[in-house]
Amino acid sequence: METTEILNELNRIFNRVLKVENIILSDETTAQDVDGWTSLTNMILINEIEKQFNVRFTFRDIMKLKSVGDICSAIQNKMK
Amino acid sequence: MTKSIKREIITDIYEAFGKYKKNKAFVINDITYTYGQLANAVYSISTQICNRQDDIIGIVAENRLETYASILAVLLCGKTYVILHPSYPEDRNKNIAKQAGVNSLLHTEDAQNFPLDNVLERICTTELRQSIPPVAYLPQDNQKNAYIIFTSGSTGEPKGVPISRENLNAFYHAYHKLGWQLSETDRMLQMFELTFDVSVVSLLYPLTLGACIYTVPVEGIKYLNVIDILEKYEITFAAVAPSLLQLVRPYFSEIQFPKLKYLIVTAEASNAELLSAFKSCAPNAAFVNLYGPTEGTIYCTSYFIPPTGCKHHNGMVAIGKPFDGISIQLMADDDTPVLAGECGELWISGQQVMKGYWNDPEKSGACLAQWKDGKTYYKTGDLCKIDAEGDIIYYGRKDYQVKVQGFRIELSEIEYVARQFFDGKTGTVVTARQIENQGCELHLFVEDTHFNSTELHEYISKKLPYYMIPKQIHKIEHFPLNNSNKTDRKKLLDLIK
Image 1 (cartoon, each protein chain N blue to C red):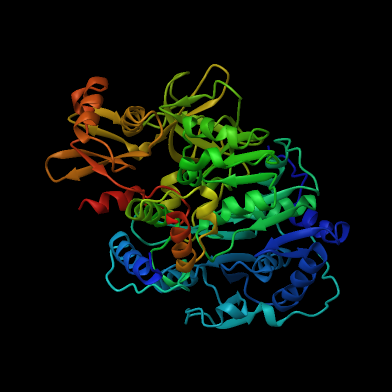
Image 2: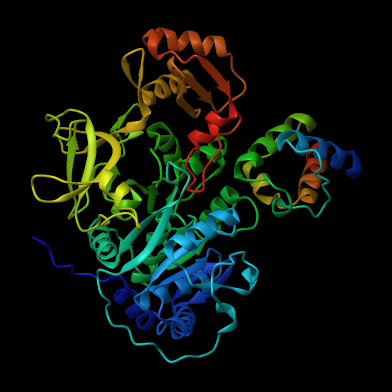
């Protein structure tokens, strides 16, 4: 799957979970840039991403996800 | 009779500055700072504030060495600190600064623009760095306040809890007597917001030992940062809120902390089943439940959880025995002691207990009471029983006991039964909503969205009398937390308004 395709899908998930409409994610986006991306919502986001892309992250994987770019490449690796 | 205080926490930290000069004092964002470096920062801040007229100093909550040095400098100078938090609304910080009479604010260069227009002087602590000869420390007047912590008042106006040096030292004495096997080689976690009083012990106590404190980065996702630090630095002593463990529960099988010697659970009632599941992640750790209201200085009871047979009520872990120097009473609604073995409101007395809320005699009068033994007690609002072995068993907040159709109900009991439906693995909260002229309506919140509500309803109906059956079941993916990492019950109720 193309990075832009993944990014678009992530945008939809983030907007839905965080109940906002104007988030525009890029590779560099981190939790500091997005209001409401916290300990709590991170778990929900991970669950939604796993469902949407049909992948499964271990706790090790999740610990390494520091930015949206990390999430994109993790999804790509898992889907290979 | 007042017992003489044997320990003075600031004296011990001051001595550690000299004794452990080369030891690591802090690891902050992967950068190590020694006791020597910490002492230098403390001395240079002290020279700025010791001779000031004002006694109450504001500190912006940041995760910088200078922030922690500011707290120590204020205490070294015999003054009082008040924490202001960048994540608080501006109005709340203003309100706190105004109430406390904060005229000077300590901050780093990262918080130059901290919005607080009613403060007269700002001191940027990161611009002071220079070699300063040690500032002499003389033990200070015990009646002076060490800090004032502002907690949410029921009216929305933050109320100040002033903790004197006498309170803090009485706490230190009793906490030390718990017999921790800790030394200068230990690595200790500090994960709490500085606006929450558990941060005080997490920062000060390691510094009396020459041990190293690991703080949690502000950047990133907090619970992941905490787990990362516990693992990477092989932390030996960690005080955490149980909700943190609940968040990583699905991944317990991947988590291992073999070096952890002590796991402290605090800040809210711990779930016995959750702790027992976590045991495999920290096989060498002693688990300790520490309980206490801010008004009684951080903690005032302790329960060292045995490997098997953890005492609990409705899944909530027992809070154990009072600290040395703390007297307790269990009181009925008419302010008389309950009979042995009965449930009553926990009242605490001793040198750890505050003298009264900040500039609020009315609220102070409502929660402090002189009992006929001549002692002043603080009414905790927590319901407890004392078992045959003298352990205090926690029964929940007094406000969680509600009357529905004339029946007295313990909300925690419904939560416990609902949790059993999920084999104890899911968070459950019951709140009572007051409906005008119709009394109370029970709402059950479940931290899960993939279950059949009808089945849960049937399950509860088989276990509990009709008046305890929640009117509605709400599926919530994750419970909201407040600033102290406790499940925010008010916010949950707001979700269904």
